[in-house]
Image (cartoon, rainbow, N blue to C red; front, top):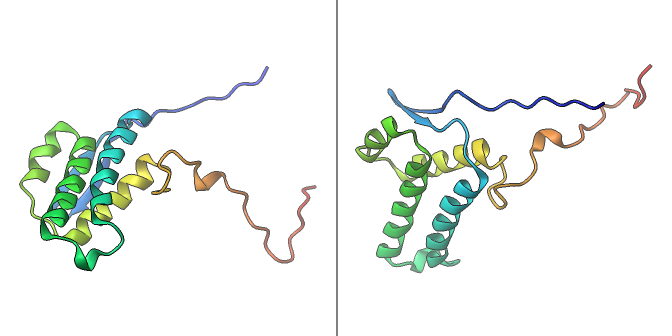
Amino acid sequence: MARKQFSLNTEPHVAEIGDVELRFRAEIFGDEFLDAYEKLREVQKTLGADVATTEPAHIRQVTAAMRQFITDLLLPESVSVFEDMRLPDRILVALLEFLMEVYGSGNSERPTGSSSASAPRPRRAGTSSTRT
């Protein structure tokens, strides 16, 4: 009989920004993550390929969508802290990348993709591929 044990994350994910800790949900259902991600992607599409010609109002919409995506994944006690923070875009983007890694297996184009940890490991030169 085959047996496999699975563990659920129980500790919140934490992002430190200066002396502030933002705490994110330990686990999230795939559909919740995809719903939040889809809202963000729809707004991002308004930018198109040429950011230089994008209207300032569109950029504000994307920034608001990024903030909403982050807010949707925060624990309740961190929501008001985050809402009161003014952050540069580079920090918002870094938070998005962090959340993609935490909830989306590190693949920002396909957030439910397989984990890079499951990829085969390359062999080192001079090592045998068989075990004795």
